Image 1 (tube, helix red, strand yellow):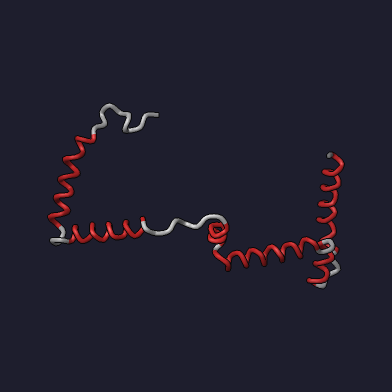
Image 2: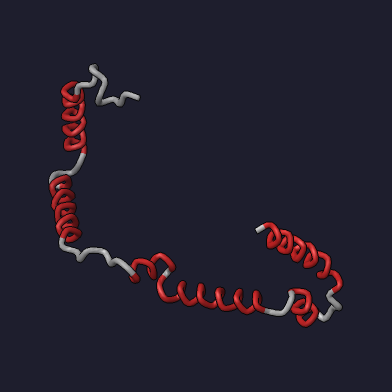
Length: 124
């Protein structure tokens, strides 16, 4: 697909007059010295960004993406809780202890899961 730059009718010279007219209108509507002050401030900000140290890489980047130490700690806590729940003896037994029920409501789904994994193990 051709872009606008590939179009033979594309000529930036035609637009230059429009850009100049708009720049003149903006300069006329602004208070004197405002545009110069804005450009000086922009140049100062650009210079400060160029002198800034390069972004961190490696573990610092990874930690920043997690939300810093607080996010990493929360993730580790969730990981530990999930590991604990996953290693409990059969989910029905855990539900029996936590909910105080006999766990019969949880047996049927566990039997289906066990049957699935038995089938998957026999096919490999």
